[in-house]
Image: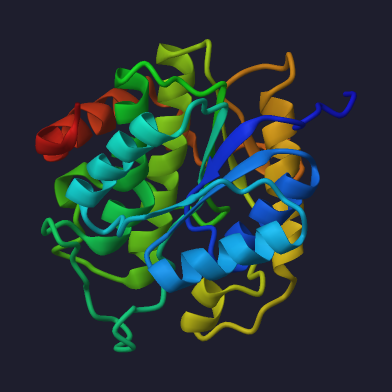
Length: 277
């Protein structure tokens, strides 16, 4: 497949102030894309923008929002619609790993809206952001979900892991939920190329270090995978794929279960109803 140009494309990548996201933003910019940065911390956003601009990269602005809040996520979508003249690609990269943010391993955490934290940040926030951008008529050419090879079937009777919690299960279920959403979106909006990918195993990121895991690779490997999948999405290839880095792969069978995808969409619409536009 010939390499697809990213020159002049407007691309928003969430969670792009450190780790894989920051490297991806730089690589997108070097490839000629117009990059929009997102993060939780205003100072980190400004540092990231300054670094990108220092490398001659067109990075017009950044957006601050805590994706643990669906209200902030919905407002992020509103700001994007109001302030970004054009959006070609949305890369949903921000996420929470298996390690507890509090430093207390094994402790179940909840989002600002009372949802299990990993389900909220890794899945519900991208669900709301993507759906709201589509509803506003700001339909990207492509949506990329940075998921994981670490997957676990979703238990709809214990969606928030209130009964049998572990950080690993919470993470793996949220990542499979991303893939179900990817396949569902590709089917319902075929004009938007929507793919999910595993960027690499235990790459050198804050997420991996917080989990107490020794990194096995560098963040650049993940950025390379994201750029590869983004280019693929902008080509004439098939829609709704899952990649293990730079090759197509198959996630868990639940991702192909239309009944499970429909059930997840409906329960997500119910949970996020106050924040969907």
